Image 1 (tube, rainbow over the protein chains, first blue to last red):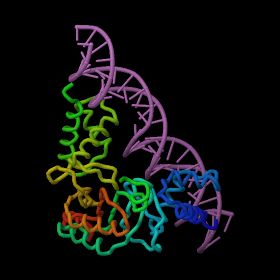
Image 2 (cartoon, rainbow over the protein chains, first blue to last red; image 1 turned 180 degrees about the horizontal axis):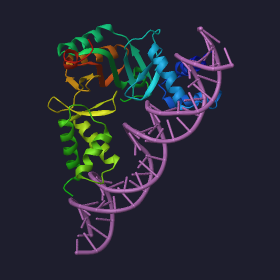
Image 3 (cartoon, helix red, strand yellow; image 1 turned 180 degrees about the vertical axis):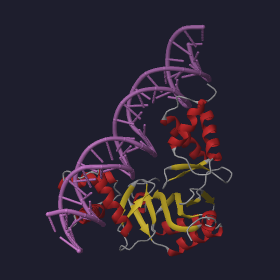
Image 4 (cartoon, each protein chain N blue to C red; image 1 turned 90 degrees about the vertical axis):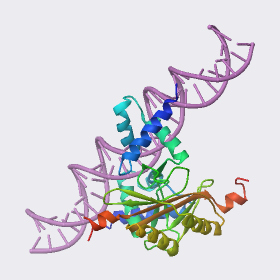
Length: 133
Length: 133
DNA sequence: AAATGCAATGTTATAACGTAACAAGTACTG
DNA sequence: CAGTACTTGTTACGTTATAACATTGCATTT
């Protein structure tokens, strides 16, 4: 079967990479219908699960949406900066911050496993160009 | 009308305070039906929005659920530690961490507004008592 | 008080997100 | 080929959230 799943995953990843903003699972589904008319929701979610597990994409918990990882692609926790104006998302990697967070949690006996860090605000372009004030 | 909404809000807050784990909007709806048979979803969401805005409760973005704020109650961003085993959530306040995160974001021109920080893992009780290893 | 207007609340319906459960296909093994 | 294990497709449904509009209560004006 030459791994149909992998083809879907490649395509999902390609669409996410070309998008300037995160896309929802159903947005992706729409895109897939261009080439695969009969894909259903679980297929997309399976592809997203595989890509997420592999670290190729990130899920934005506060947006119910997905974006391509901007930094190579082994699994890691990122800091995501979400512009409420244009919808773009920046990604930063900071082992230091993760360390500090882990330390905080551990101080109360908690063993961290995964960090969700999403900062909402306004990006530099929107601030400077046409943004708030 | 003596502010029906405020009564609902008090009740939602009371239920959340008594719960050892976060509750979904529809969990809360079930609880409300004990005393107000005909409440509908938007009513709960309006109460949740008001309470969230006031800082009395927090929304857990990665769980689609809500919890009572554990630290007094003026609006603030928290660090939430979510136990994947028992479902309990701990809350920590750390201006330092927020500062660091804001600094990181600002370095790329981003203006932060709200921080979502959710750490998934296993709490001290579950680790020690009956948890992993 | 009657009329007006506004804001809060109720109600219906539906949109958006996600997954369980099982069917069908494929490929490998003996 | 028969058996088995895994992947993919399909259907149906469960959960989360909100749009849109109706209604209610109350304050203000006249």
